[in-house]
Length: 148
Image 1 (cartoon, rainbow, N blue to C red):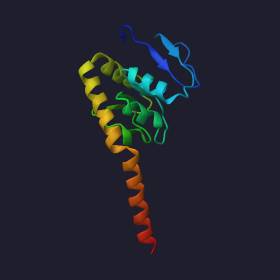
Image 2: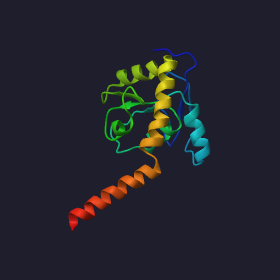
Image 3: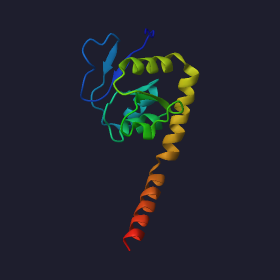
Image 4: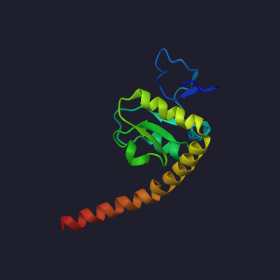
C-alpha cells in the first residue's frame, strides 16, 4: 500500500524497526503533556501494535485528543476501542490486516473524522476521572456490603 506523503511519527524510547520503507521521525520520550497532546492531535491515526497490554494509557490519550486508534484485538485495548466506532481492531499477529486498517483510515477522511469525534466523546464520557472515581466508589461499597 502506498499512501502519498505518509510519515510515521514515533514517540518513546525505541526507534521504528529497521527496514521501514516509509519516512519516519523519532521524537524521543516526551515529558511535556501539552506537547504530547499536540502530537496526538496532529496525527491522523494512532497505531498500537501491542500483542499484550493491560489498559494502555496511550490509547486513552490518543482518543482524548480525537485521534482514532488502530490496534490488535488483545488485552485491554478492546475495552477502550470500539471496533468501527472509535477505531479499528484486527486479529492479533496479523500485520497485513493491521496495515490494511491503517490504510483504510488514512484513505477515508470521512470515516477517520467520524471515528475521531467518537473517540473524543468516548474518552470524555466513559473514562473521565469523575466517572472512574464513581465506579471505584460503587465497587468498594459493594465489596464492603458483601464483607459485612
